[in-house]
Length: 180
Image (cartoon, rainbow, N blue to C red; front, side, top):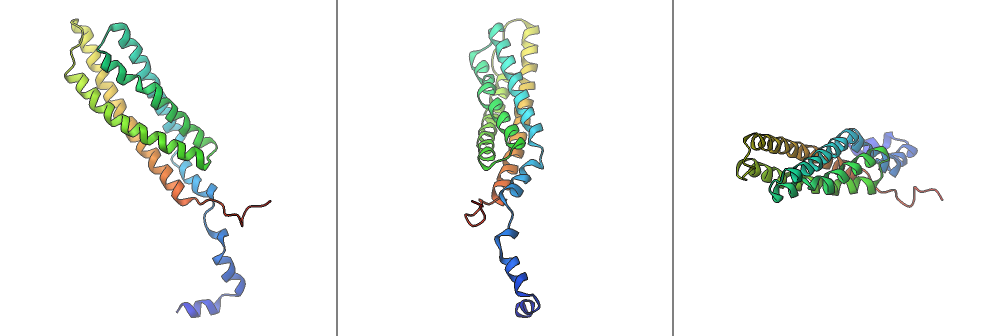
């Protein structure tokens, strides 16, 4: 049956179907990354990172357990750069930027899981200052940070899945297609 299909096509059509021009280009594949609106997701990462950093500074002033404070400083070093890379990869997508955003968001997902566990235990187990009002406020803050870590995990998984889909569907331009 495919023989009859070949007979009906002209030779020019057969060459056009077999040409690499019909395969998705790198920019078309990276366009899949932009469909998810990574700028919004990156802004969420940056915002949560800043809020965790400000909370950590507050915890230093209140003299909360140093372990809890150290957990919150992750935002400065992981969440904010990951959000910035995600925004940069959305604005001008290149393979390198999407790969960098992918790598950082994998790190965000891992740290969000660890942070969720630590925030949960911090809200349940760690001793807070003797002041009842301070203790209630700190527990509520830890529960908020637990929710923020879960949100960060979801956002990072969305970015990672979008980046993987974009990178897998895009192809590197071959030497035949480049113009000198």
